[in-house]
Image (cartoon, rainbow, N blue to C red):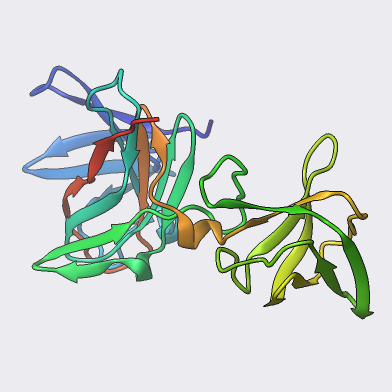
Length: 249
């Protein structure tokens, strides 16, 4: 863990927060905060460029971390983040079971509040999600050019699968990715086998939809949220809220 400055609040009789800057000495005087670094004195909240300490710009690392922990013995789904702020932030949510993200551009401003849904990471696949769809046992497989393969089954595929879904096959010890679906016609699925492994006849095939598009918020007992803002102009954050509901497995 990197070094941090910890602050004490007489009002709460505790240590409520950490700071990333590391001064040699610190003092409050006349409603101002002064610190010393390298033998020089610095007045905080005075320079025009925010997230800059001792001449070093820390804007990519300026963050606020908090925890949602109401009803700590209940498993919950953390669906949204709402920020009472004058700017949008990047939000990274981590629970004891899953994780999610909101890029700053995903927030929408509604009546002075920035609102967005927490989405799963696009490159993290959870094979226990309900968006996993079983197809069936493979009857035949034919290479139709390059990395394109046609997988044939003994039944019509139906409409539950979509072009763009990733196709997997059961393998020991873990299922293996074949690649994305490029076409579905009757009993045949065409797949771009960019991932490499090719299943043999008899293997069970299943599909996985885009984790980010299908996500509904991370599941867990608590949720730690890290907000990051790279703006070098003054930004205010008044509160952070989340739409949370109990999970019923």
